[in-house]
Image (cartoon, rainbow, N blue to C red):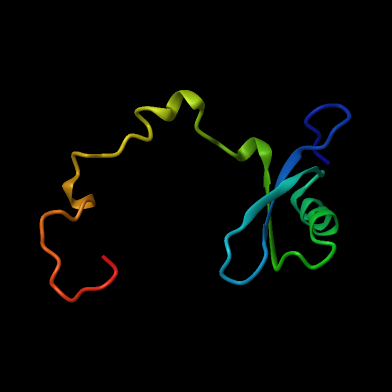
Length: 98
């Protein structure tokens, strides 16, 4: 068993899928010694009443995210890539949903 500290197992993030085709959504976190135990504990804790058809568990330390300081340049649209903006052609008459 791997422990991150002397008295705690690693933290795992739990994602549930409620029905076929739906996205997996974050349900919570739990401690477990390994992936097998994490998925079993996730089933017992987060899907007791058949709330899920699929469960993902990911070690918290393996998740990489952006920080608030990335809000500017990292997420700015790429206006130099005109192919992302379909403005160079006209939409024919009769096309619906525009």
